[in-house]
Length: 233
Length: 180
Image (cartoon, rainbow over all chains, first blue to last red; front, top):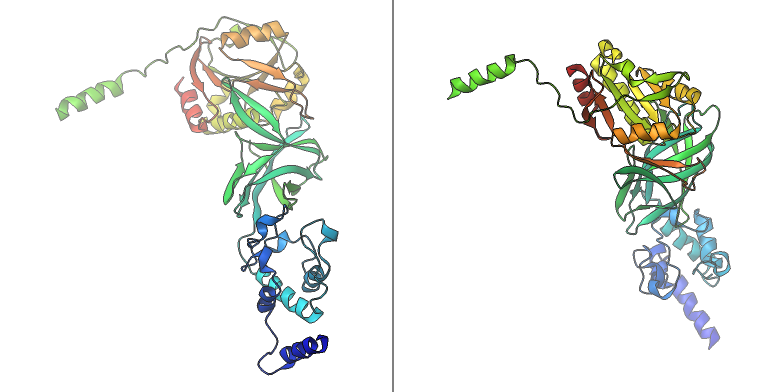
């Protein structure tokens, strides 16, 4: 029986009309779409079966593993970090085909399109020399179909960065320290004077532009942006 | 009809500008200025003034309002510099030297920082119908102060004739400063 299968495979692999299958064909043939979806967007029929959401493979920055063609091929072979995510290894897929699938995904993900998350218009208000504080403002753009939360910010320009929200409580302006700032699905959140801000505490002396801000989100995405120092007097 | 409207408009235009209505009668008060000297509100009589309650650690609302005030002075021109801005701190951390340094940063504003013992501050706050509450915020920056954010315009008698909220356009502050 086994020789027969091997023979059949040989025919399939080498026979006329069976030229090299495209990466996409292989992606579908090996059932990757069951979890990752026919469009590789993470929305396969099996997506709901695991408590870990399959990756949207069309977004390069969503990859847990390496992002090069070789790296993706290796992830297909060995999975991601021994089950730390739902991605198992498929060592039985021949290397040549793993590379073809990886090339297909890499090309798909590297296609220019709106970034999942984008930080823009970041600026820091010139610190008043009397206080060791400065407020920073920016806009976060969420181009994904799920809300995302900013959970931590750090900067080389300050020892501590907190997230603050302005509320009007009983007619008084009240600054509340918050643990997360939500950016709605397909939406933007703007931190601006009179609203929310990032509070830079214990500033680098002197604080020099551009001030680098590193933002961490609840899906572990980390983005860095450069903020100008703006004299708002 | 049109003639009478024009005549009426002319009458109106030529009449002396309507005096601002007093919104609050303010009794004289005494505080300490940013040079550590006694400040008496009576010393302002004869000149209008702007007045604001805030604190130097204020992360956003106070610098935003002070920036607007600075723009209003620039817009109102050099003659407006006879109108002082009184910045009354509601935070005991704000000693006179801290206030002086803080306000020196807003060079366009002829500002006077005022502080004093809490009962005196509270009495002034009450007169102006303002409120504040010092709150342990869990912030590394120390306590945060919830406070009403309003800019008051005082007439030459030291009474409140105009209130501006935090969304005010600096041009409007400038216009009102020039009208006094």
